[in-house]
Image (tube, rainbow over the protein chains, first blue to last red):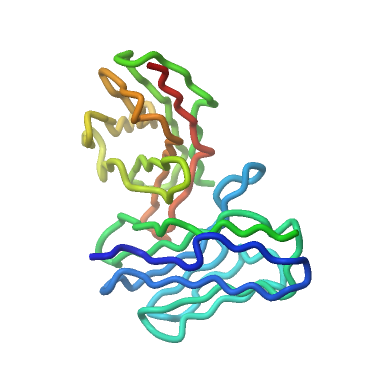
Length: 113
Length: 112
């Protein structure tokens, strides 16, 4: 199993540009989570999906952030327009409903200049 | 509400020293408890878990025992190595919503 795959690993973009982060969960996992990690705020849950349906997006900081899961094997997190304060590492994680163990991707380090 | 409190870091030890990272929790019901590890530049990996009181989770020489009476899940290792240098996160899941509640993380630095 290749694990949770995120792309890109690093993204540097200019303020105001659109950024799209991608995630492929582990096959058979029916929950998918998007987290943001910063030094100031630690790990924050942004949104999670169950069977491709968004369940809780209360952690999404602003309307500039949106997430989709069009099928069981793919999810995107989009920021439009991006701002310097969005700079962080964004993690995707997945798990099976029958198991409490989360599997994390390697993350996308986003830098907005 | 549900919460996890970890000892603040960084924790700096010499190689082969004994390690304890304290973790206490507040939760409704009967949570499951976890330790995750994050190596530099990587994502979080599940290190060990315990799903009920008095369970002991263990992996890679690390151990933690679910203590309901003290609401604790302290991480221990008898002899640390330089390769154990990482950030360690304590976390819990409550059955009501199955979401992970994270501690702030403890950075561990092992010097040769």
